[in-house]
Length: 332
Image 1: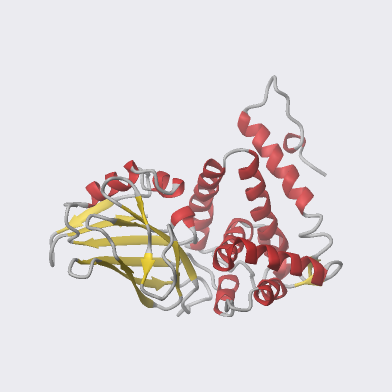
Image 2: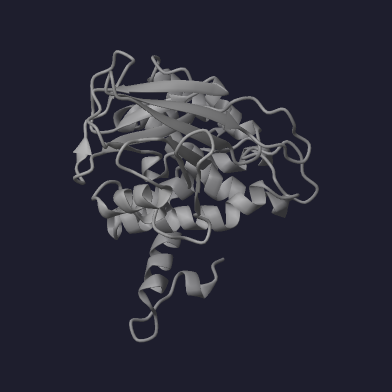
């Protein structure tokens, strides 16, 4: 039984937002035919298996029907405004909770929206083709069954045997929004950028001393003239216009080779992981402060999500410190 405003609209009285809302809701419920009905949850603890997955599917559909960049920006806004606060408050819980007092409490922005981001990260890790192979295997293997989140990850894993998703399953069991600190240093002699990354998953009610997550960070390079620069990571892989840097450890460094002078990294493109990121730039020539770095990255045609996200926002601040050398910081 639907609320009528979720299925009925009139051109005489409805706004574009009303039409988009109905389109997304009807799509969501239709997609449940496969992800929720034909393949359903073994128990309530697996609720994100159908809701997070279906939210991701309706987000992709809405992007295809309207504007992918605008749709993604709206989804990230919703995540930051509602799910991030839940993850840092007394109601914080994993995407797959392990207990409940009232089942209606399961229908949360963590289960739905963060659950969708977990699916998005899976696609980023295995690639679009690998993700399609995994979903095809999942539907073929479990049609007519009641399954678990582990069964879902296993299908993606089996379809992509070269990718190890064992550690990735912590996204289902650990609550909290990970914080990633990135320290950017340039080696002018070797034309390299060193990205030193550290991650910390904060304590939440009932969970302390969290283990490191698998965090895919889509990374590009932007020149001072506003063009995208090929990313060449010192890991034996082929250079690409953007690379997925996979942060697995509590502390990990990545070296980008053949970086022209004045280039800046464009991190977390497409908001590739539901995290908080702090970037510190260490004395990169040509950029005297965080403000000039932010103005540079906003003014160039790079990733739409980063372009919007790095524009002034209530949660985005910049500071500069002169201690220990010239440093500039950005909080995302």
